[in-house]
Length: 296
View 1: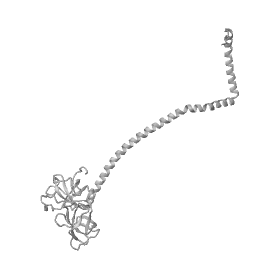
View 2 (view 1 turned 135 degrees about the horizontal axis):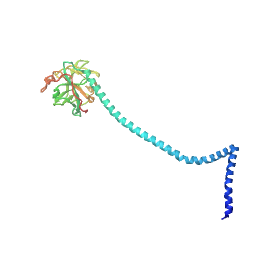
View 3 (view 1 turned 120 degrees about the horizontal axis):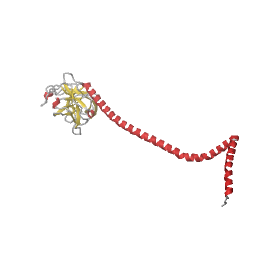
View 4 (view 1 turned 180 degrees about the vertical axis):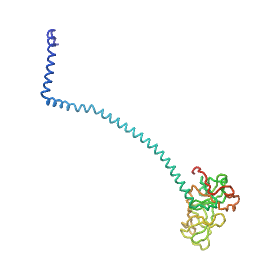
């Protein structure tokens, strides 16, 4: 290793500072005199360093992009959760609206076959069905306390569907016209011939005991004849739609499986059956409607 004497070291220190000052001055003078050359050199240095700078900055850019996407995903998730909750609320309201619309339409339908003002009647709702291959009847939310008696006609806005056969304090049983035990005296409106509408637990009861020589055609309308004293004449029942051999089948005007509300009508003939009281005798006014029990 080269060792300098103290004298030479002192001399070198004395000349180093002036040399540095001189080099700085020369560089400043060179920069002032040749700006184009200095700028070109600076551009070359920047171009050479650009790939390195881009590589260094890329992870930061990717990190910012990932953070931005994560924020977007969180916002989308929250919005989706809010929309799902709102959709659930709307579905509940939709079901309620559809149910009310259906009930309103059925109640309006009852008005199409409103009895005369002098006749007592009340509106009730079906709460259970005993429909099976052996029995065709329903249970309603009205009974003896509401003035229901045996023999009263059960109708909808489309026509006759049955009659009251059993009465409790708060419920009653309606025998439908399709039941095996149902027999309704009817008249064929086209020919004015009489027959008996006989249920057999199928969806379409048949016409039996027709008068000799009665010609029945598909499309003939069937209504009650008034014979037997239970139902008055003229209640619409159904229409002939098919034949099984010589047996005419009648399609009821009312879709029995879709009925929720019905009207019980007291035509003042309930005393023809034992154990019956009229609505007036029970202190019930005409057109009395019952409350809204649970849907069956």
